[in-house]
Length: 135
Image (cartoon, rainbow, N blue to C red; front, side, top):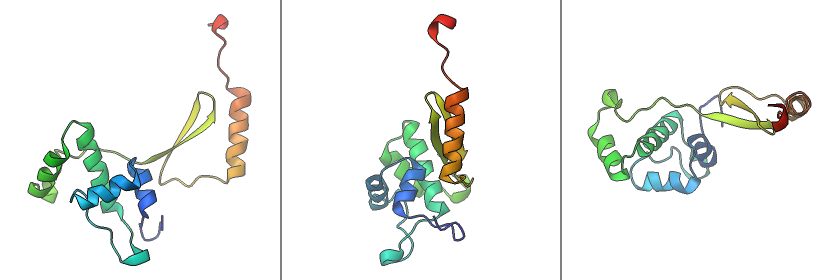
């Protein structure tokens, strides 16, 4: 992402929204997401696209059909979007050791890969599963 400008490529938008690039394109085609900004190779998405994508995904997970979501999005004013809005945020999941995960908010910069490797080594050394006969 171009953090200074808040721009996402389609792959990053899809990753942050937990969907495939194909789904992003389909949602744009179906009017569930606005078209990307810019033209040609400069096409990009912004925070409003991510917010809408998460809103659509949350409504779908709550059991709403895409047709119902589309109607709600057309008939709801921006101030009244709460019925479909579920607080969500994008996180990265790093598996440090078997059974040990680190969840990092997407707006947090990760340390260098070498430092992450050191953390993973520490976790593998100090955090291990309890054998069943010791429980």
